[in-house]
Structure formats: C-alpha cells, structure tokens
Image (cartoon, rainbow, N blue to C red; front, top):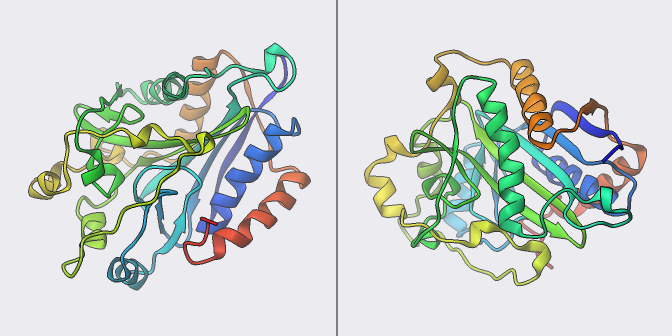
Length: 295
C-alpha cells in the first residue's frame, strides 16, 4: 500500500451532487484511476436519503418536501437518513485486488470490511475524547424505517445511543461505505417527517445483487413503535456530549487522524480529478430524477 491515499476536505453540495460524487469516486477507483479516498461533506439544502430498496408513501414524500428538504435515493441499502445538523463521510477502497496484492486492504467479508472502516471512525472519535462501540444486530430491523431508530452491526454508539449509521455498496472489487455522523440533530424531527397517519411508511424492494449488499439488511430488536414511545433516546448528538460546538476543521482533523491510525496509511488532501467530475456529471442525471435511481 505504497500509493498515496486521498482526503477530500469538507464541502457542501445538494443531494444529487453528493450521491453522484460518491459513485464517481467508486467507479474511478474500480478502474484504477483514483486512490482510496476519505471524503467529508454536508448537504444544502438539507435532505432525506433513502435506501436503494425503500419506498416512500406519497404523504410522507410530500411532508418531507414541504419542510424544504430534498429527497434522494442512495445506491446503498439501509433506511432513511436525515442529512441536517450532521456530517457525512464516505470511504472508498478495494476489498480484493484489481491489480497487485497491495491494492487490496479491505476484507472480502462485508461484515469485516464494515468493522475495518468503522475502526477509523472509532479512532477519530477517540481523538475527541469519546469511546464509541459497534452496535449489535438482532430481531426487528425491518419495522424501523428511520435509520437512527434501530441498530445493526454497521452502526456506532455512544453509551447505548446511536451516533453514526453507515451503509455499504460493492461494485466488483471496489467498496463504497458512507454514513451520517450526528452533530446536533433535533430528536423528533425525523419522526415527524416519516409519520403517516393515512398509511404506513412504505418499505419494500429487494436488492439481491451483491454489489448492493448492506449489513443494514440485518434486523434488530428496536421497533418503530418502541422508539416512538421513547423518542428522546433516538440518537446521540456529538455537540450535546462534548458540550461544545466542535468545528468542522477539528472534526476533519480527527477523521484524518483516525483513519490514518486505523489503516496505518497517510491521507493527502486533494480534490476531485477531471475524470471524477465527468463521471459525477453523468451520475447526477439519475440522482436528479424523483427517486428514480432504480431502473
């Protein structure tokens, strides 16, 4: 692993751009034209992203848009995520060698690869003085339509409360994992957005292709109704825990240090290549369609 790895510093984009850029880096990495990359970003306007296999009922979609939020379908699996008052990360690397053996550093096991990447997040938050731990999967995940109302083995917790939810996409030898790090998100906002008194939140669709496999398909014993009864326990906010507003610059430094420690490889700041920008422009077309990623 002698080649340089890249950190793309924090920037803000709309929902279609954010998803298009992540996929563009994934494709460029698969073709050997981009290095392993850690990217940090925000969303403007704020948005709700839904998993590849999710469906929104019309009343829920209308409610989300009426609050001024974009809606985008991710290429990854999992449940709905509110991208407001949070930091999103993405990490792209290789699980099996596309060329020489040194190119592959992530496990071929999806679960193990999640743990490898999550170790970078754990190390990052240790830089901030917090000890995060991996969640555990069990029984009722499919009853929860909000990512942060239930836990899987891909999630990170602080003292039992979920702080980071992640999902993963595999495309041949390349891996994309992205996730949401909660900063100071209102506890009941997502619950309000997803509530539909006329008909339940529609969730369905299957993703049998291995490239769209996500550990988020595992279930837990935390159901939507149980969480609604205790909505104040929905998630952990970083700012509330550390009792200060941590700057994006400090968060970025912590993320860089955490991933460098976890993978024992330096990250060098850089931007998108012209090739990645071209790919992102192509991918943006589908992400701009109203929940039209599935074809």
